[in-house]
Amino acid sequence: MNNKERGLAPFKRLGMDRFPMWYGADPEFTRNLVNFLGATDEDNALYDILDMDYMTIRPVYSGEPLKKYPDGSVDTIWGVRRNGYYYGMSVSHPMASFETVEQVTGYKFPDPNDFNVDISNEQKNKVQNHCLIGGTWAPFFHDSVELRGMERFFIDMYENPSLANAIVEKCFEFYHELDRRTFENYGDLIDMYFIGNDFGSQRQLLMPPELWRKFYKPYLKKLIGQARSYGCVTAVHSCGSIRSIIPDLLDIGVDAINPIQVNAEQMDPEALVNEFGSDAVFFGGIDENNILMNATPEKVRDETRRIIDILGKHGRYIVAPSHDYLIPEIPAVNVAAMYDEARKYGLGALFS
Image (cartoon, rainbow, N blue to C red; front, side, top):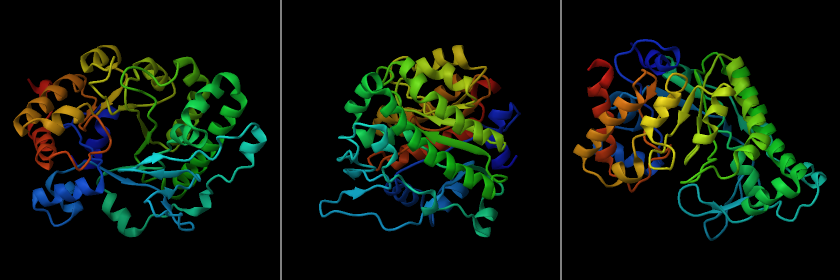
């Protein structure tokens, strides 16, 4: 079984030799991992040594250089200024003073023409035996609240819903069109459409589920539907407690739920499997906040086996941490132990 076949097996309900594995990290963490493994480079570490099953190719920004400031902050393609560690936080909200839909539609939104959606022959050869993730990350929820400011935007949902919806729609349109161009260009090579919007907090959804269904579900359905029309399986990332909308995600055609933040409320892995295990592929769940960050490698191995036994109960599981972004503070030895144990343990409870 090659990596592509294994990567698709949980979606297709096919037999496999072990559960597939996915990797996502800050570049600094990846350098730490390369050094720990004694690898020659990132590809050698991830695909030769750890044997990851998924590769990702996203559209690449090729427009004018984005403005950088002396304090280290930068402008994004949305005109939002960000600063801080990793991705940083928005420190400006260019639509904060907007009062009308016309002001929204007149704003200078990102242009899909500023992105390169080509794929080289070298990339084609590289991914041919792996499960390829393609399209955009499409974080249109984050973009909509950053443009307006989260508090103001959530108030708009009640007091000025037409303005709130106009912002969401324009953010959605950018990703939908950029995805369309990507699929038109090399959609025959893309196996999975994997996108991310953090709708959950540690305790519950960031907004009432009925507002999520009004403002975000219809657009998410269109993004997922477009990917499915090109034959892709689909996965949605959302940190936090999203139990209340998992039925909605499955309803609109989402195949896999990521990252299964097991220490958030209502995200107990056993309860999720009992309720959704026959319908969803579970993707993640190995605790990053406490286990990968603070435990010994032996404890990491124990937890890896435990989560495989639970989330892999129906044979529909992808091994990954409970977050999409491994940060440099995490010991590389623990992440290496997680993936090594997942390879050795195979299908866990399915074989016992």
